[in-house]
Length: 414
Image (tube, rainbow, N blue to C red; front, side, top):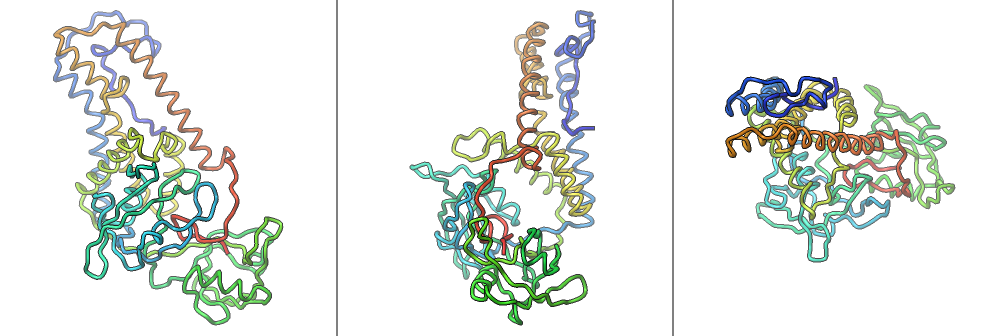
């Protein structure tokens, strides 16, 4: 069953017989009260919320691991924007420092790192020149400061980022995420999920250290100490410059990320539901605000939701059911929007009928429903196209690669 949501069919409110293939749309139907219509129309959303609440009870009891701290671990000097160009990191330019704790973004309180990223991404602030702008309220050595930044748009999604990363765990060495074919790393036997600890006996303290060390020792075989599961091995790898791709810096040929500092939190169900609803409200506001960088292409349809469920399932069952709860709250709020064909549209029809004290014309309601069903189908096709691009079924425009730490995550290429 596709997670498209649904609607409540009330013949007395809007006859859907023609659209659904029925032939008794003129049949005389017994009247129902305004209250009955409103209750039936809202029950779909109510049960979405109740289901999300039951899931939230499980998460509350078991706990979920999140990057709870909003303390900055790394401020990137450069990031890669959505055009594939290496640009100065907005956070670094605005004076943010490692150790700063983010309290608010554009006046909205932040309670974990995901909240920070989401609030920044859907921000609507701009300068008089039209440049994205965001104000971060931070705590630095006991002082409360307001820092104005100008986020860059990154990735094919063109999301706002200022190039900062959370604190890493006690093992802050890079973890291999992906290996490049015909490059030294894969040829030497490096594997995905290997943790790089040392280069010639020197601890790897940062991505900048890794990049600098390879540049200084590009003509030598480097003894790379790797943690693989419970064992520690040493691989001899000689970096090379991928001249065939126009690169100028030596690399091993792998993408990496870090394990960030997580905490198991037991957030009460009401707070979880409120957080989901608040995220949905902010996102809808960003969609209709011309100052934001969020558009319909950033939304997900059935395929995107299924892909998201698949990704979350690989992360673990807690993240999987958390995502299901999020979907249900989003569906509940979406379905009560005052749009014909949704539950909220039925409520609008019922209210109009109550105001004018007589039923709305059947043909009028059928026509409006038909138009909005068509628009809904077009919308689903539109967002599905971008869903397919995200999961690489449809090709996207290629961007030049830049060998440095990426913008929103610390996954760099070396």
